[in-house]
Image (cartoon, rainbow, N blue to C red):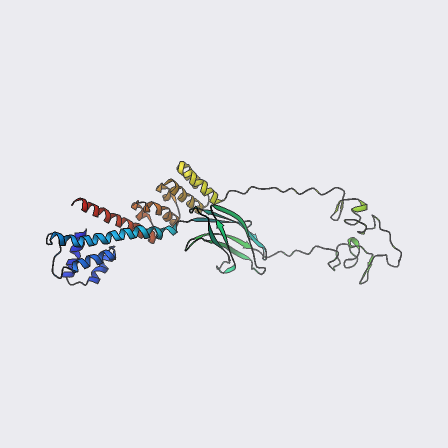
Length: 400
């Protein structure tokens, strides 16, 4: 390979092509710019018209250009080993964020309530994350935005609320949750919900609402509110009588120590709702419903199962109804069991590429042709080329 590259550069220079033109051609064919520069510089030192093939050079001169190319290649290998993992690492999610709404329909001015679960899928150390909550309309315009900072070590789950504007228009909306946990490292979750026009609920009638309702004879006068007649003021005695009326339990007035009209206190009864009840209210029974395990919790259990029974874990993934959850589950099983064939079952191309990354980083370059993301494919091909160059150098060194 080295001899062919040296011969090609020498032939093109002899034909009158400029070094820059030769370099551009070789780079387009996939050769490293640094490698091409080293070869052109080695040929240029020999002067025009001089051959540098192994048969025409002394052993010392023949070794010199090869040594320079070897140094350049070794530099590329070292640089790739240092930089490529850092370039590829952000594609592997460190956090998994799941936002689950308490209900799917809200009214303007209501509290948008949801449960947020954050699971640490990578680092074993406790660190801070910045959370950003955005309510977007159907045109992706921000209606409400709020942020907070929280710390996480393994996993956390908490309840969040966002107050919706009182003038919010009916329609479809989306809540986006963005977790920022480092330079350029993001985890996201979202869900959709609807906003409906608030129903008009008539105010509850009382004895101080300045309105004639219930069984009153005037605003807040008579009936359940007490009083006999109204002429702009409420009178507590019958019209035309000045005598004090003695309170009783059948005067249809809430007086004495009653809890309602002729109900409670000295009249007997416990509570009043338009009728007097002779027994106490039944205590309210609260039924506690255990929440289903979160998707993040399921993935932790699936990762453990994949290490001992990968086929069983795979079948559980395939039984999931949601396509995106099924793909994430298969990726988890593949990477936990170190079996790349489970990546092939993933539907989404982005998730499938992310599943392949650890395997081609470990040396399985047959996956390069399966990748669809240009950046991932280029990284895989670069690693494969470096490995091929390294193997060629080792063979050349072994042959003497």
